[in-house]
Image 1 (spheres, rainbow, N blue to C red):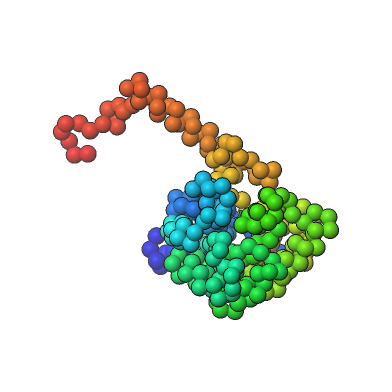
Image 2 (cartoon, rainbow, N blue to C red):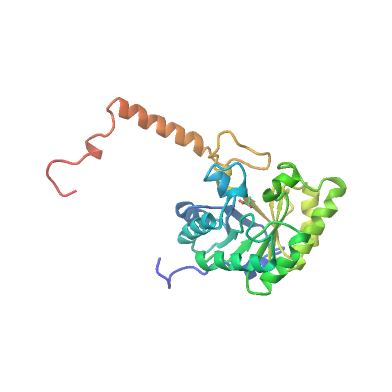
Length: 274
Ligand code: KIV
């Protein structure tokens, strides 16, 4: 697509203005081909640090580096037309100080062209969110289950049940009031998702947070069924790509062993152009 024909990319201001205007659709992407497909259907594309587990097979997101996020952010941006790209700040790249967060957020946005960064944390990160947004960096918040804190949370558990709901609600409010243009709510009860959505002036995007949020996000590989052995309760599988890939690869292996592949159709004649 030429630069002039390129569709206008959705911005953080557009997303913020969508509060109460109907559900926002968001998926992760980590590669150019997947970004091209996701772009046709989604408002937001998240280059999530989930790529550490999904693409690299790491045990958690803690081992993800700035270099990994930049390489995959660039790949995703090559595939996007209209959808907004949000890129995750990896563990250790923003928690030390607002200045450290600014340096790394600016690098992520400059080197990838993404329209915003996402960082995990609530009340403790509010000053950092305010520092970044005051300096031209749109920030998406992420509260509830924050996977980078898996060790202090004691696992990937539902957050905010019972009286603990007030803590998660305070976290969401803190980052929204600090300037976040939207807030991801991960793995909280449906009722809490609705309560926070009603409380915030900016959109909430839920993952395992029920059907009352302003939008929904899933890890694209999860909803496509690319992991036969991993299916959290909040994921609906819309395809069985692991099964389809397994069957296709088994067919290929059998045909190679039987000398049924390649045929003449896949071979070159001694003479000719192609
Ligand atoms: O890293 C990620 O993919 C995320 C989403 C699951 C919200 O943070």
